[in-house]
Length: 568
Image 1: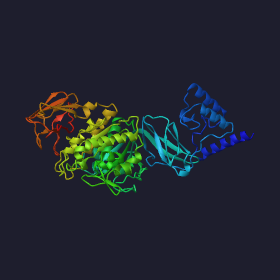
Image 2: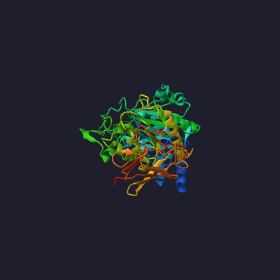
Image 3: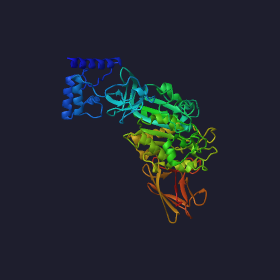
Image 4: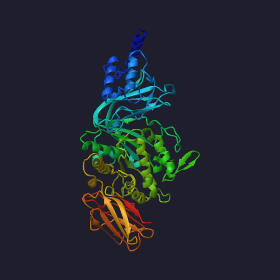
């Protein structure tokens, strides 16, 4: 009799804790989902284990060891007979990372991870999460926890509730969508906002009059280098584990005007071309004036030997002397466990100087950094795409041609990297702020076409991205260079009367070669009288298509910048 009373009491206590938590749809041990825990659940679990049937929602994992087997049957039988359910004690208090919020977008077709923290007194206790029919449980260890739900989800434009619960306490996130999440990363040209375009009379009318409505399933989360909410010393190895920007996830009507024009315009055009069937979540990280090393995790920075350390603060050369790694440590680190669909990148202006070699090493460093990002994101689509904006013609004092050429070589060093060419998208030499051109709509239009072709099957990447140099063979004592391309859109072509924009170095400056010609649909041949040390394209900061550059695909998209060395 005492054992029966104990069993009933335990069930009442468990049920009561669920009720006080706000009516959760899951009771631990309720295998058949009828709201009670009794012998029916034991029989359901026994039959499932014997037949190999899958119990939905993780309900069969009674002892919370990550597997469903006879141990769970035994544990549940003992429990309904009046025993204790081993190890099942839920946390009384916890916090969820601020990377999560109402209206957010969760990446489709990828693991759904939720994480956070709890006081040390909660160590060993459990936390449970539920979203869109998926469930997961995690045990708190060293004050931290992470739940991975038991499946993946396809896109869903209907907002649903993400619930994270403990004992008598839960956190709910409402109107959560499932779609594609992109990081939008860079310097001031990423910081260049929608509101700036709207107030720029010279900008495209399409950008100035863009629709901003909460009806569109686009959600925004912006971290920016301006006001430093991190509370950490820039340049140290310290990381901010939680997201620090107070605004969190925002709907377009509240957040779009302050958001990156490149990011919002790209998502807007993709959303429209997909007929509104896929929600988009954009996470912006902009560091005005920051060189590449500011976006590097500590480990990558140290492996590459980029920075020097003075009293625990790391720094490295750049146009502006910002500390190293702080953009990643302060802002990006908090989102590294969240799967993404890809990265949109517009940065490198502060890596343009030849004296510190940043412009020559950019592609190698970038590849190492993105490889690290991909490992940390730990996506099913491990080598998710990276879309890089090529610098348009720039007419200021610094020479951006060398870093632009080096950035054009990133796809030869990093899988699934793509260049959004822009040599035909900016012509205004009189514009005072030409380092920050107002062509964001035009760049985003090409960017959206590239992403749609590469990731969504709309269009052909051969037609949309533009020729990209993939290899160069030097022969005839270095007097002949044969350069092969991909994304030629039916075959290489050139505008005007001659193939222009290709230069060589035989001594110490870029000069025109003896001759250059297209010898097949994807190959050009360059000839000189003496040995070439370098061959390149788009070699001057003011080069523009078709005025000084004429190589393009059969669909008229300009070639991206490139360079090849024959130094040994």
